[in-house]
Every structure is written in structure tokens, then in C-alpha cells.
Length: 146
Image (cartoon, rainbow, N blue to C red; front, side):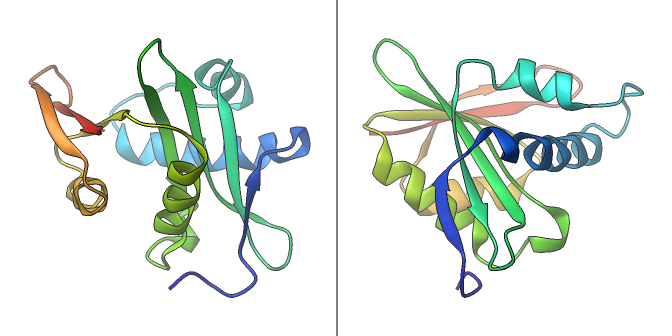
């Protein structure tokens, strides 16, 4: 169950720096072998043209964000990240429920094969693996929800 006082809403311009920090921390943890530093510019490029939502805590802090873009015949969930200190509290699940209610179907996403937590989360919502890549350095699944 997510923390009380959690607000799920479209992101505002002033939320972008907090989202970029969450993005940076998650990317550096997932891609620990890379030497580059993820920053606000990297985040801006990664989310350019996308619709963003945030999970805001009771004290106004940004705890998670999600971003999607519209392909011709489906939505693509590009990012869903929860701040390290806010993980395992149901925040990512609550944000995903909110985003899925806001967008249409079908929805696609990619997740790294080693990220079993993410795969279980998405499968719990009905996403199914439709492609598996063995690309290096990390293989990934493409998943789809009809």
C-alpha cells in the first residue's frame, strides 16, 4: 500500500530536477559499468516529447516518475523509476495504475532481463513478453499490454 498523502499527477516544470535525480540514480545503479554521469541534460534528452507523471509525497517531495510517448498504434512506457529510499512501498505500482488509467491501449515497454522485480510488476498488470533481445551489455524484454 502506498504511503498516505501520495499524490499522483502530471509533472510540472519544477519537478524535472527531482525526476532527473531519480533517473540518474537508477541509471547509475543499473548500468554500474558505465563511466558517464547522468545529469539533467541526459534526462531532458531521454524524456523529450514525452508525457510525464510524478508521485509526490505528503511533504511535496517527488518520490517517482513515469514517462510515455505515443507511437502510431500504441503507447510506449519509456521510464518508470522510484527514488531509492522510496522503493518497496507500493509507489511504483500506484503510479503505474494511474498512468495506465490515463493512457489508452495497447502499451509497450522494455525492461532488462535481470530486473526480475520489474518483470513481476508488469506481468501482474497483464503485460506479456513479446520479444527478447540478447544485446549486450544487458539483454532485455519487450512487453505488451493489450
